[in-house]
View 1 (cartoon, rainbow, N blue to C red):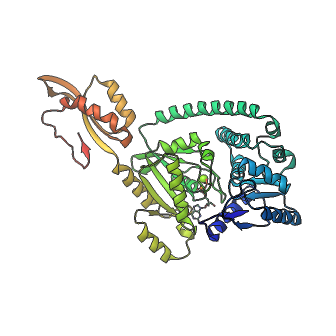
View 2: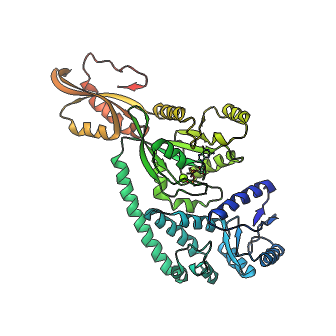
View 3: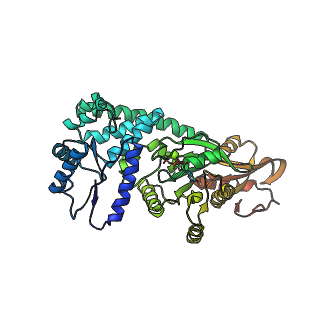
Length: 436
Ligand SMILES: Nc1nc2c(ncn2[C@@H]2O[C@H](COP(=O)(O)OP(=O)(O)OP(=O)(O)O)[C@@H](O)[C@H]2O)c(=O)[nH]1
Ligand SMILES: [Mg+2]
């Protein structure tokens, strides 16, 4: 059931229903009918008008429908009323997506995140009818946290939510310390609409074996691997959960520990399926979702994927002209990957700074710190060469590269050790962008 709201065209809603169709199939059900209605104002009690409700009921009866799915999010009241009037199992888009999440969650973390999202969704919608969603019936919409939880009262759900939250916080802390351990690497995250080919690209460049499927939300966990993008140049690449339109922010937020990867990365790879006719809209949804998650101003490389599936070469030429900043690939066929690595390196290097410092050899702690936050490009021990306030000191010449996020760490070091520069050392070493 799709609703054509004010300012929406029938095509917008058709398209959204096409996507809902895919979601339904991903969840393992079959679509028998589509119903649309143009409304000027959403009915607070039943979302659609009374007449439409009886029409749907009649149709569902004729077709022996097991389930009715609304393309928009229903309020708890609307859900309750409609279930009563239609006497049929009912889901809205959010609940359907949650169901797919539950089907696809593999790791303990993903399962915990999904259960939390499900319970938070359920908490406000706890009605007698929700027992319909219990496992007894089988089929889609049943992969809930189990009938026992559904039947327990809100207080019990609240307790379970606290337990899950505590568990996730623990996971968060572990992940944060893991990330700290690999601080010096440049972190790159794959982001994009679901099914764009993020995991396929990950597998192609990182030689991983992440599950790739022609299904929505195949990936719910983040996978991180080191990848060589140039000789001697390693980055950490992470695959993440995809986005989709009309996905309530709180659902995405339940993937916090997965999305922290995105938040803390230095560079984003925005993967787009350009063979999809609505790809520009997908790009917009991804941009909006990132903004909602407060991930803005990150250097981003647009990766136009699935060029092998484009119907006309002319289309590809037009895209090249329209998006000169994008890099064009086919992750599945391995086309354009060399150019892709080069573009990624360019994006990374554009924001990095290189620094040369002369440090007294006693400063082992500082040297260790620099190794943590930066990538050392060269290191030279210079015994008794430096004249500082008429003192002869042994120093280490350290040439290193740091990500923009460490600029604030490097600045005070430059100030603190500037006196140790040998009298005849140049202010900047060769190569552009050097700060010394
Ligand atoms: N024709 C073509 N298909 C591709 C290409 N890259 C990926 N695909 C297919 O697109 C589908 C989705 O690929 P995934 O890599 O799972 O996409 P994803 O972005 O990780 O999707 P989610 O994890 O579900 O958000 C799979 O059927 C892939 O085989 C490509 O370059 N060309
Ligand atoms: Mg994936």
